[in-house]
Length: 266
Image (tube, rainbow, N blue to C red; front, side):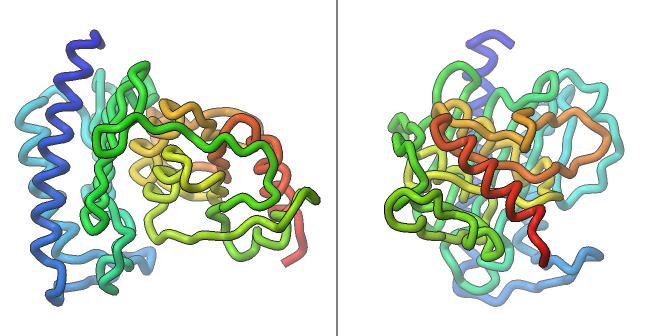
C-alpha cells in the first residue's frame, strides 16, 4: 500500500472507531443485555451494536477487504483478500459490564499477515491510539515510545499472578504488577511507556492483538513469542502461543520469566 492509501485507511478507521466509542459510551450507566458464549466469556448487546456499526462503515467503504471479528463467524474469505479488517468490538467486556474504565475498541488492517494500520480507543479514559506501518504511533495525536527502562527491577509489568513470583531479576525492588481487563489496552500501555512490559498467556486471538501489535512495534517495542517470532494474522487459526511485549532492552528478561513460569510446577 502507498503512504497515501495507508493514510486514507487510517482516517477511515479513526472515524469509525470514534463513532463506535460514542455509541458504546451511550450504554455506560445502563444495564445492557448479557449472554454467555460457548467459551464462557460474556458478550453484550453493546458488543453487537458496535460490531454492526463498524461492519456497516468499514465494509461499505472497502468492499474488497476481508473481515475478521470476535463476534462474527469467520467464513475464511479473509485468507485470500489483499487486506483484512481485524476487529474486537469491545475488548474487556467484563470491565464494561462491571462499570470499569479499561475496555477498548481495537481495529486493525492487515496486509500480507501483518498489521499496517491500527486504531484503538479507550472511551472511558478519553484515549485514542493510532499507528501506520513505518509512520510511528500516537496517543491523542502525540507520538508515543516504549519505556527506556533497561532492567526489570522497579519496573511496572502486566503479567498474570502466576508470573509475579518470577518477575524479580535481582536488580533493585521487585516489579509491580498492573492488570488491565483489556489485553489490547495492556499492550497499548506498553507502547506508550506507562507499562515496561507485558506477558501474554497462550490462546490470545488475532482480534485481541492485531491493532496493539502495530502500536507496540511502531513505538519501538517488541511483541514476539518465546522464539522471537512476531505474530502473523494470515493463518486459518486465530490463536497465538505465549507472547511478550517490551522495549528491546527488556525482551530477553521478559522471555526468561515467561519460560520459567511455563515450566514451573502448578
